Amino acid sequence: MSTSRRTVLGMIATAAVAGPLVGLSQPTPAFAADLYDSNTDLYSDPNLAEGVDYARRYRRHPQFDNSDAGPNPFPRTAIIAPHGGGIEAGTSELCLAIAGYHPATLAATPPAGPTCDYWMFEGIRSTGNGDLHVTATHCDDVPAMSVAAGALNVVALHGCTPGTAGLPANTQAVAVGGRNAAFRTRLVNAFQAAGFTAFDATGIPALAGTATDNIVNRTLLGMGAQLEITTPLRSAMFGTNTRPQRKNTTNQVFWDFVAATRLAIAQTEATQPIL
Image (cartoon, rainbow, N blue to C red):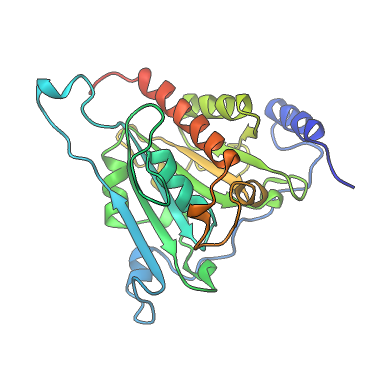
């Protein structure tokens, strides 16, 4: 028997007041123990090769210290996907689009606001990409740490199953974590206004994203926002949900999610003084 969207929303609303998701199954761990203790550990494995097993993509924008560049000459928010490619499907494409780049062409296509710095780690094997998962609190990739440390805010994109959040199977939802409470609230509000099921996940240990050593919180402000997107929602964002074709088949669900995220980013940046 399926569970209606109204019922799910009602249970989430109850959870927001009462704490853990009341009336739902208990959350289950997102992943078993990682095979690698850190990114450095993974990179040192002689049986793995960059460009064959995994890939890294990142971009940092130049920063100018002059009055001609305007009051905000560089983006304040960076977008990261620690488990992209075939590890947590769809997060690479979302990372690029939220940063302001079309995932298929890499052309800058922001509907509003600047392009952002980004970093992603991707599993590019035909199978077995889950073995390349390194939990976000163990992320020590140097470009990733540099991107995060140079930003006021970071949005980290992750994938989870509905069961991880104690939600009914096939639920399309996004759980918002991270240490920046105001940013979390803006994201939840923006997603809900766009028609997505969204809720604050800081009461769910597996999804909270509040550890200080989580890469999402290693920013100039010591806090960021983590998006845990259920598999059914990520699947709904693409016409053909395969690693080669996701970037070419993004649909309205995908772009609505991107627009809602960028709206919350813009709202957050508008409250932050120039450093």
